[in-house]
Structure formats: C-alpha cells, structure tokens
Length: 317
Image 1 (spheres, rainbow, N blue to C red):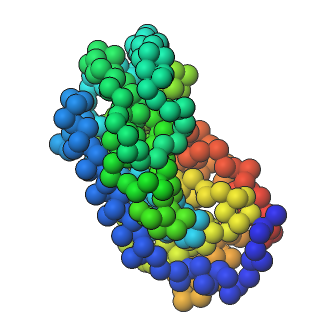
Image 2 (cartoon, rainbow, N blue to C red; image 1 turned 60 degrees about the horizontal axis):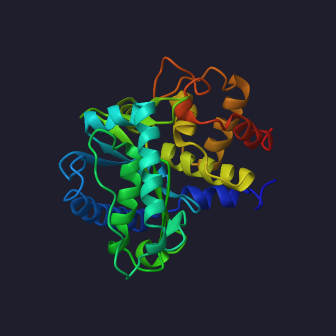
C-alpha cells in the first residue's frame, strides 16, 4: 500500500524536483574520500592504486533521476587480472578465510568486539593482515578498503562491509539521510564490469557502454521528459514497495516505450499514456539495455522486481 496519496500534483512536483547541487556535492565528497583512502591503501596493497581503478555511478546518480530516498550507488572497478583470478578460485577464498580467522583469533585481545559497521577509532591500530598476492581476493580488498576509509571520515560515520560491498552512512560527511554503497568489481579498461556474485553465480557482467548509449540516444530523441518520467516511476515505486527499483530494469522498460509517448508539455498526461501503454503491451519480453540478447527477466543485472513493478502498475489500472 502506498505511504502517500498519489495525485496529479504529486506527480508534477516530483517531475520538477532538482537535486543537482546535492548530488554533485555528495558525489565530489565520495570521490575525494575514496581517492584518499585508495592512495593510502596502495602503499600497503599492490593490487590497488589510483591508476588502476575507476568509480562508476550505477543508479539514479547515473541517469539524473535522483529523488527523495535515492541512495548513492557506485561500482569501483579494479583492473588487476591476479585479483580477478584469486577471487574466482574457490580454494584460495577458503584458505584466505581460514588464515584471516587465525589472524583474528591471535589478535582477539587487542581488538574490540568486531562489528560489521566500524567507526573511526583513535587508539593504535592492530598489526595489519599480511598481504599475500597469491591469495588476496576482492573480499579482502573490501575489508582493507573499509579500514582505510575510516581516518578520512568523522567519528559519527559508519562504514560497513559485506562480502565485496562497502556501505557508508554519515550525515556529517555526506548530508542528512545520505547512504553510499560501493560495489567492488573487476574491469579490463572496457565499459564492462565483472561483479563477483559468489561461487554459485560467478562473475556477473554489467555493460555500461550499452546502457549509457541507449539512454543517451533516448534522451536525445525525446528530451528531458524521459528523465522526469524516471523520477516519477522511482518515487511511486518506492512509496508502494518501500525500496528503490533497479534502475536498469526501469530504464529498459521506458526505453522500450515509443518516443511519441514522451512528447508534450503535460507531464501528467505523458505519464498516464506510458502507464497505459505498458499495461497493454506487457513487460515480459522487454529487452535489457545491459544486454539486448536477454529480457529484463532473464538478465540478472535487472534484479527481481517484476512483482513489485506490476503492483505499481495495478494501482493505475
């Protein structure tokens, strides 16, 4: 059930939201802090440096549809073949886990009780885990990067790590309700990032070249109304389901819609025409803009929000 009443006035106000300055300021701060942490970490870990990483926004920060309740989500691509190889090796991951477990047990009296989220600490750091280039995986890098970020953030900021994802919460550093997520992945100087989804899923390819060019073409053809409709979809989806939709899924659906549906001065009428078109045509066979050989249901990069998206459409039926 929607937490707010969805009206014509609401839809128009959402379409006209402008959070460009807030997004730019936060984005600059994320880049600044991350660059400082990577530069510091590169002195100890040879697998990462400012020369072999790229920070790529992947959600509303990329498509300019940032609204209330949006987060800042990025992929940090690391160009290092050995790191990719170490990550994909089951035996290396297991051995590395056991060695880190031994290390943690050995130093248990020198450390506070371990938490998933860490704050900046003033006390002397424990002797660091020894870097072994034959066993060091992206999971190890995520944990080390978490620790390297702490000195560059205020004490009230929380930095969490789960597998190969870093999450940062801190209103003093980034603004009220700002949430930053950084997904660590491999890349090889292309626009395709390889995110490791675990031993069962393996590497998941995320193609930013296809996505970006498709979005660029669509916006060029239909103008700013495309971005306004994205903002409306994001806001309504959140208020119905309680979380933001996968942007590649939403972008794929809207890029599938004919250009003439986006033309006109009345954004509310445009929104209703698009909703009706999607309802008539259905969404089962819409191609993914990440990989047009797959649909939004077969491409795992699009997430699994079909039920929630249909729930959103149903309130306008």
